[in-house]
Length: 173
Image 1 (cartoon, rainbow, N blue to C red):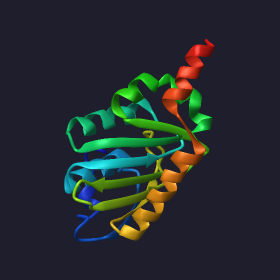
Image 2 (image 1 turned 90 degrees about the vertical axis):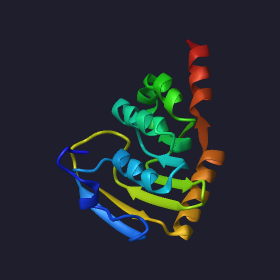
Image 3 (image 1 turned 30 degrees about the horizontal axis):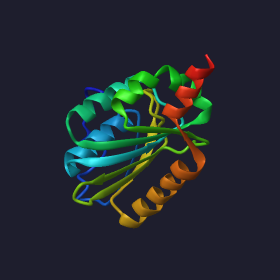
C-alpha cells in the first residue's frame, strides 16, 4: 500500500459493512488480505489469479509469518506457467497448494477457524502495479459458498497441481 494510503479510507470493518467496493491504485490485494485476516483471525485462504509475482509472494510470506493463515490454496493460469515455474521454489515455501488451470478469475476467499467468511472479487492479478484496480468485498455466506464450490470444482476437475507439473519438467530435462 502507498505509505500515504490508509485502508480505512477505502474499506470499513467487515462487521459494519457486509457489502463494499473500491476502485483505487492505492490498495493491493495483499493489503486487503492482511486487513481481512486481522479481523477474522486464523483462516484458510483460496486465491485465484492469472499470474503471480515475486513481490506478491514476499508479501504473502510475511502475512503467513503472522500465523493467521492456516492453509493457502492458489490457482493460477496455465498460460503463465513459465513465469510460475521460475518462482516455484519460493511459491512452495509460502503457499500450501498451487494449481494450474485455464483461469483468468481473480477471487480471494477467506474462511476463519470460527466459520466467518469473506469473498473478494477483484480485477488485480497477484502482481504489483500502480494501476487502478477494483474489488467487491462481502461477508455474504451464499456468495462464499457458491464461489468456494466453483473453485473446488476447478481444483478437483480442471487443474494440474504445480508440484506434479514441476516434477514432470525436471524429469524431462
